[in-house]
Image (tube, rainbow, N blue to C red):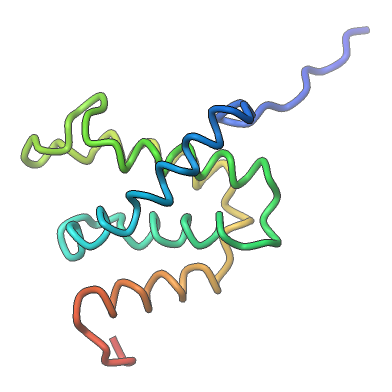
Length: 130
């Protein structure tokens, strides 16, 4: 009998690569978010994913998957460059969606609440009802 293959994450764990990606996310994430508030429909998901990566309760493999997707989001030159009107963020959205679906149980309501709060603050809307 054959043993079933071991499940694999969407992104392999590569310590040296993941440290580079983590540094890229830490350096560029909030600047990109500030520029895109109100313009990108999946921004709340990206910010929730970011908060998940900073949560000490999040497993390392989950952090690697989400950090890789967030690093792809930050890099302006990718499969479809971000400056191309309408299409520029479709590849970013697809990568982020795939990563989030892979680790969905680890993105908690608290991460989503933090994301909504941060986006309200960045957009200048401090009304707690929105």
